[in-house]
Length: 448
Image (cartoon, rainbow, N blue to C red; front, side):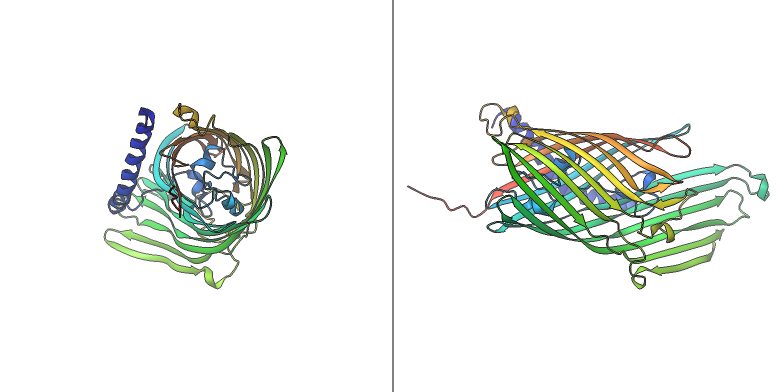
């Protein structure tokens, strides 16, 4: 093991130790402040929050592609059919961390925020010949925001003193999934995935008066949600030249109903006395299909030059216009902007190259390099305005030990929204870390 390999090994060990300590650290944060954010953006106010971009650090380093990716060295759960692209008897696991840095601007107001969180955990293993399984958990969406403003002595309602307004939201939905893929015949693979989406979202707002004779008002929504859906996928790989192959892929996720509870509360207080104005629970179980996740269809095409390079383009479309979220309290009514669910779209492109995966002399030639770009349109509009995101991604996988064990590092930089009207321009620089574990099971040693 040369010096560069030893450095990567030390980094990997340090990350594993940090991960082991992270649950205790997160628990301390929760004990000290109930509003610890998994993610933070003003665009998480409505609906079920800001949808997380799916995929491991490998996918993220290539702009988020993966529908047509067939790489035997990594886990790709973006298409259930991709799990069959593997070496025989190989066990794989992927653990991800995400760190986000954001700058916001609205008119002459500027602010910034940083977050750090565990992102995903996925494992994959073969079952029988061309059949393989995978499963894991990853964030589905996040809510994280905190707005405040103060009005000084508004004369229209008397001598109230200063009035402080705050709005805060936090919480996440998680996607627990289990899938399988199988090779039907030469080049054709299909797969299916069962998903259970669950979690808690909290949205709170307050109106406080500095004049003690006026009652402050507290309100909000506590949402406990869950739903079950499924995703299907297929891939067809075919040769198009010497050492060159192409893969076409497609996925479809069913738009399933959301169940659970939406607790709405509002009360006033003066001194130590509190009066309840509203306390009601909307049981979504009794209204099947009233609120639902949007369905999603994705298509992709990839080119691969042996075991050296790969390029891919994806298109995704998800219809949330019939989700019902713009008509149900708790999902729609936060602040003064008009929320309307619509159809989201995404175009993604990525490229990867490894100079020589089996080079025994130069470690740097065994590193995999990645780059990508993407354009996303959100699943909702604010005041009739579409929310668009553009970004560039870069990444590397540093091999550790033998086989396909490695440490994947990635960066995602881009912009969402704009400064037009009452919109917020959000510029971000996000870092992704993936710990890729690869092993061969059931090796029978032979002796001469």
